[in-house]
Length: 317
Image (cartoon, rainbow, N blue to C red; front, side):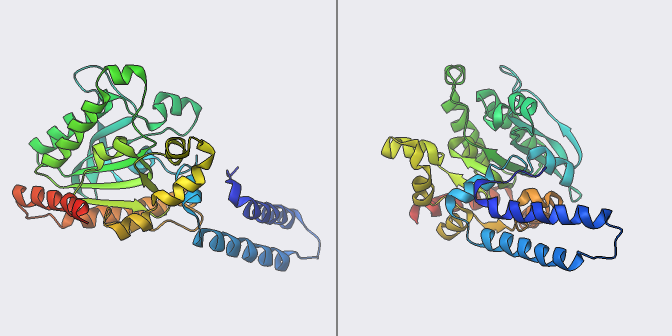
């Protein structure tokens, strides 16, 4: 069964009726046809979906970005990367399953792919810690970026995290330092980095692997310094005001493109990425390939300068 968000209840009712009529039509041997009524209802359902998703609020986009059926990192790996070989461990403490990385081929081009994996069911979410990485995850990312540097492999990162894990153990092992060094590693690489926010881009946990030459966001993803709930708790001491925080923080892809924080928006199917995973994965693969093609033939210094100027321009803006 499809999972519907709170604001999708009218759509859920219409699609439920469509499903009921389809079942009746399939099992109806009588001369009475309900096909016309079915087509009318399907049209209403499609129009309701299009109308709703044409005017989503920032909070509604946040809900879509967190949708449990939204494609995650491993879905993208299976859909757009051939011969993916995962590389585990930070060689310092342990393996962190919240960040996965490895080598593969994207449209025939050898790349290093790194990203957050949230998990798709209860067992998976616990295994991957809901996509919230500990220091060893960011140190693994640094190690893999070092391998990419050594073998001149472009780096592709897929961001989908509410933020770095804030637990006591993570802080004891140097969470802030790990994030800072991962960000610094991104900035210093001589190979191009292309990053896509595929769901949530939360705070330093996202920036640590998204300090890239080109940054894209899916149409209904969000990128923020803190979750709307956390921001509401800080600003108004009331997490229930998350809707106000989401609206005022300018966290949508459309806002961030206008501010120059990102370089482009990857369209999603009407109703969100979870309604047609293969289409959105194919669109992301094409956009990443186009971005990497921009750097073919460029020197290491040119690639580093491009990345540096990008982030300096944000500060000046």
